[in-house]
Every structure is written in structure tokens, then in C-alpha cells.
Image (cartoon, rainbow, N blue to C red):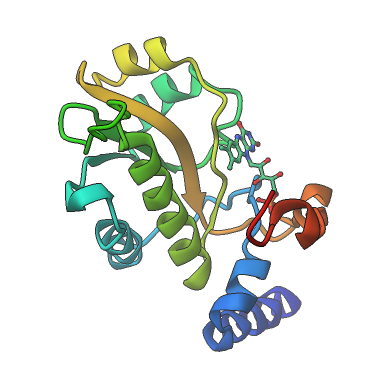
Length: 189
Ligand SMILES: Cc1cc2nc3c(=O)[nH]c(=O)nc-3n(C[C@H](O)[C@H](O)[C@H](O)COP(=O)(O)O)c2cc1C
């Protein structure tokens, strides 16, 4: 227990002194959650960073469902194998009737907006010692039905969120990133 507590203190200290670059490197998809509930003010910090996210024309079409009721969690767990038994799960949606639409080709930017919101959520969570995984594997229609998601809302991702279990570690994918030359180009692809 003492070892665990000192490890936690080390992690918390590390988390506090991390600059953004270090935070971006340290965040990883957490797939082992402890049962420790997220304190209200801690969750509020994450949701506030989601609120501050930029959106197309500042239309703010994101709609986030916080699922922390065991009955609702059970319904959600029927819609994805990747719930990791987290006690809190955020379902990130956008309201397609409220999102900015590009004149030139009628492209609805709601999915882009909601994805940026999801990034804010994951990085803010990591900054305060919480873990998340962005989950794209879910049955959209059953999810909408079981969670009473309004017709106009499009769920783009499910984000289990919580404190890491003691034995949680990044998966091997976390350290596998393409060399910068494969993803960044100057002036010409
Ligand atoms: C759009 C998207 C969908 C994803 N879907 C899932 C998923 O359904 N299940 C899962 O376990 N991880 C999912 N992930 C997590 C990725 O597998 C993970 O981010 C990637 O392997 C890099 O690892 P890291 O996040 O630990 O750095 C998803 C990530 C993104 C961005």
C-alpha cells in the first residue's frame, strides 16, 4: 500500500509539472479503470474544458451525455465491447441541426467540432490524473435508442473516463507513431 501511495504521489507530482508537450506524450488510452468515483469538481473541470473548445462559427453543437447511473451504464455496455467497466462514460454527440454547414458543399462540421471537443476532454482529463479512451466501436442506432438520444444528435464517440487502476499501463500502440515525414508535408504533398 505504501509503495502504491508513493507511486500515486509521484504520478500526481509528475502530472502537475508537465508542460503541454509532455502531457500530449503522456496521455494514453486507459483501458483499466479503478472503481474510485470521479469527484464532481474534477469532472466539472473536464466538462469546462470541453465547453471552451473551438467550434465552427462558434455554433457549439456538441452535446455530451454523462453516464454514471448504473442502470444507464448497463444499457450502454450492451452497445460496445469497449466500455472497460468504467463507472463514468461520456457520450460525445453533436446536434446536426445546430452545427455550422459549409456553403460551398453543404458539409456539416458537427463531427469535426465534436472531435475537437473530445480531444479537449482527453487532454484535460490526463492533465488532472484521469484516464480516458476514445471509443469509436459502438452500435449507433441501439445506442441512440437505449440512451434516449434525440433524433438530431449524432454520437461520434464514447469516452470511458476515470482514475487508472494500479496495474494500468499504455498499450504498445501508444509508442507507435509514424515518423513526422510520413504525415507532415511542406507546400506540396
Ligand atoms: C477515432 C478513434 C476511435 C477509437 N476507437 C477505439 C475503440 O473502439 N476501442 C479502443 O479500445 N480504442 C479505440 N481508440 C483508441 C486508439 O486505439 C488509440 O488512441 C491508439 O491506438 C493510440 O494509442 P494511445 O491512445 O494509447 O496513444 C480509438 C481512437 C480514436 C481516435
